[in-house]
Length: 56
Image 1: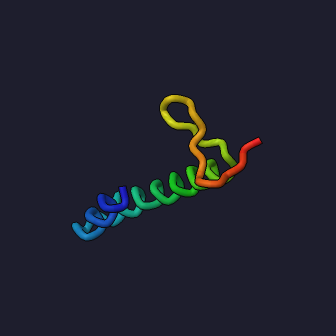
Image 2: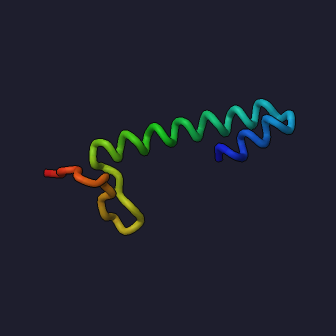
């Protein structure tokens, strides 16, 4: 999404490009928070954790 956003901005389509970049930033923020608190699940329903994360 980031690449598409930058391509749109470079092509002169500022509003769609900035909109896509904002959506990408919000999505990245949400996924990062879910990973940090240990609530992110993959397609099989298994928790995705970072190495060394202790979940109780």
